[in-house]
Image 1 (spheres, rainbow, N blue to C red):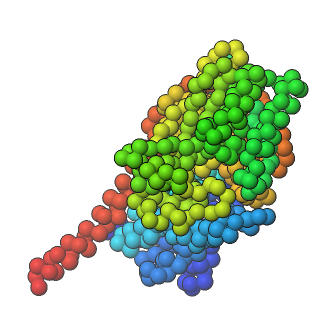
Image 2 (tube, rainbow, N blue to C red):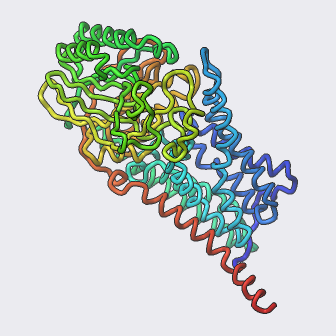
Image 3 (cartoon, helix red, strand yellow):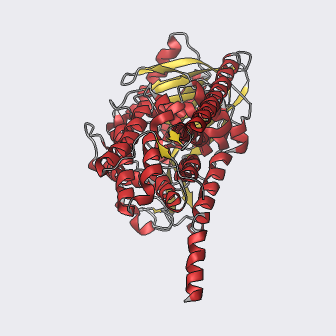
Length: 556
């Protein structure tokens, strides 16, 4: 059995001190989350809770373990994600209630790694538990993004998006950054440990300090090198782009959809009159908030196509799409037509690319939908409950897209490019951008409507999350939001933004890139391996107790 070690800090002997340790981690994580300028706080954020777990987890009851971790991550969610339950003008009560429900439920999932670590600590020692921590936290963060009910917004790796250390995401991805961040926390905790030999303790701490310093220097040096390489990519093909921010009310736009299209056209026409000639114009999510391509709207559709032709642009815009199924081919969650019950259909939150001079329309249907707000999780299996989760602004019950194919367009010079369209919450899933890049996207675009959360940190957080996708894939991103944050994001994650809550257009040049980064090629290998290691440790630490029970049963 390995010798137990204690810490320089006196172990918390009172439940209140244990609670303070747990809340300290929640506070530090919340303060580090984007758009905070204190992202490097994440390198010490987990230290208090890990020290508490090393000292006390073996002696805490299950309910105290639950209470401490729940308090920690309730505070974390409250600081970083409170805006999801913010009350806006015209706010729908369902949206507000869902934000409160998320705040109550989300800490339970965020606590899972620490339940596992507490179990490991109970059956072994502090060292084993600590070295399992990076794998447990990073692995479970990845697992958090793998279902219809997922919400991997508060991944620790996002804390480094605007730092030089975030550049390593092109190798390990955001969840891999989480593993690395927690590893730094673990090394700091180990440096606070002492043995019975003072001389041995000093030598060990010296080695640990040197190892941590070397790791951080190499990590930062890699990030600096990649930033310089991105800055020197001026020789790559360039595309003139413009993102249109209409600043329209997200509730009212569903009641006057045609006027919303007219507003976008007016802004683009004004931009072109000023002498700016973009190759690619991007409109936000559901900028066309109705099924304009259906026969009933043929006149409106032809007018839009004619305007795109005369403007000599490629237009990428969000809109409402419809797919009609043959009765035998419809998914269980498909809607039944009120006009003809034999017809089943799905409505999709979609993006289409209209190219002047061609009738070919490329479409991307949103494949990752906001749980409960846009679609009931696992709707194909819970069709009886579909009507329970619909709210009154025309955007609930969407169908789920099945493909991630980039949309082809050409510039005024005749250069061919492929843009990967990412719609709103799809941008928090690295798998979406990776699939688009693997399928040939040389630029990306994020279209969104964050106006539900105007005046909160939400839109800024969402923009920084998109910046992580730029770093992971080394693709330029045109991010177009209804009321902000509209930005042009470079492959190093830096961006030029348009002021939020104003009508206007952001124009500029972006570079097209065909590089396939290690992260795009390998995907989330590191967090998957981390999860496997965590599960193995969880099982292996139970084997001795299981064997003892079997021997006891055999002898009695």
